[in-house]
Length: 68
Image (cartoon, rainbow, N blue to C red; front, side, top):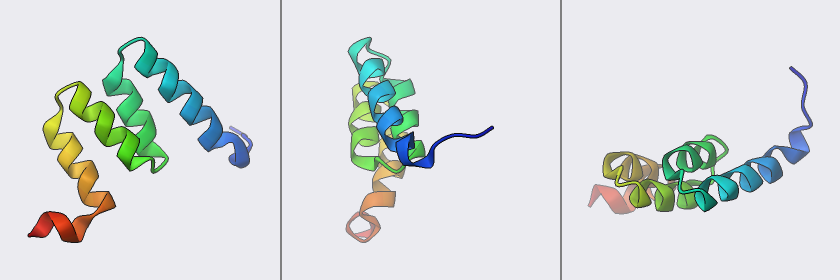
């Protein structure tokens, strides 16, 4: 499968925002996490009450702060 690597983040952002608009926070979170938009993913995980996944994702962003 070929795709334009320059547009991946743009497309993911657009799809993620549309998922949020229809209250599919779990799908949006997975999409955001897959391209490294961890802060957006954390917000979506919290919205769908997936706190373990939000914490796991937060460890990707600020691992030192969460070890304290």
